[in-house]
Length: 388
Image (cartoon, rainbow, N blue to C red; front, side, top):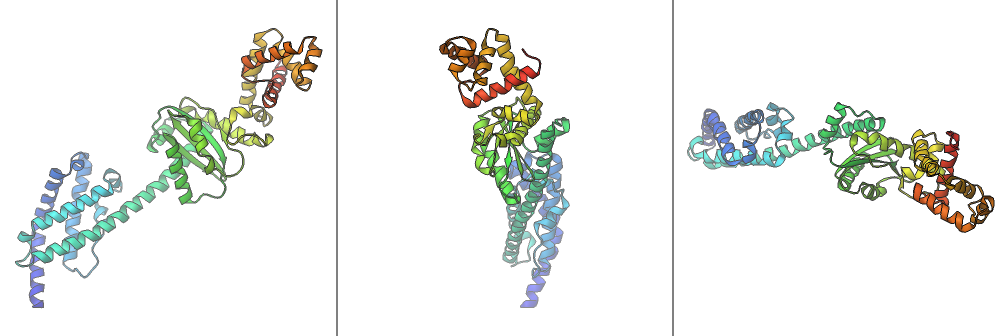
């Protein structure tokens, strides 16, 4: 009886060898008829997939000759194709492919199996397909891990280049490869990490940033965390929602810029703000870089210096009248309306009225302690730059 089973298996094996071409052709025909995603593939990918099908059938026949050995996995089957094929077809598509090959072998089992051996052939192909399906999941997991590691390295290089202002054509193509759509504005947010970020925490951080905004990039630079956000929504609100992802200490949000190509301007302001934030211990968290203009001037930020002169001192100088004189008297005499009025020989209500005009012209209110400090710094810078 055992010798008969061996003879039947040998007979089935010979018929499988003779019919391997028939099986491969039938499988490819069924792929084209039943799977729309296969028909939509480029010709080159369909050709590679044909090699994968042939390899799968060939490996099954090899394994069928000695079923006691472990079945060949998907790694060997996919060895005939380039690794990039895992980008063209998903794991779900691969499992559909495996099921289709099983159906083809079952459909031809009566023709290929020795008389009475049809059931054994069907059971063998089912066992083989189960092992291949498990192996396919491992292949795709490894491919995803490799892609994730490569994408993380590429993302770090891109963020580095954006911070430096190296926005060339190569950078644009790399950003596109990372999935940046390029719609809407962009801003940069910087802070520190509470502890070193391993691969798992870094991956979770990236998922969180991508949930917060249409586009997102993350750069982990030692204990410094740089997040670039983009899109058409409220980017400041998106940045604020990520506050818990940062470690203790200041978190600074740079100004919005029209596109990613200008992100260096936002990054420069945010990084200067991070360096200067210690000078304002009671600053909000997160704090806008433009709220740290006086402190940024102290650390040598020329952009902050120019901004204060252009947005505060120059408009007051252009307004004429006595606005600059009134502001100077107010900030230099303890921000007292009465003291300023005595120096200027006017009524305190006149001082109050002029200070309201200062707020209208500059956007900073001299009656607010913090904003008065901003204006006082602008006043000093304007004088140093040769203003009257």
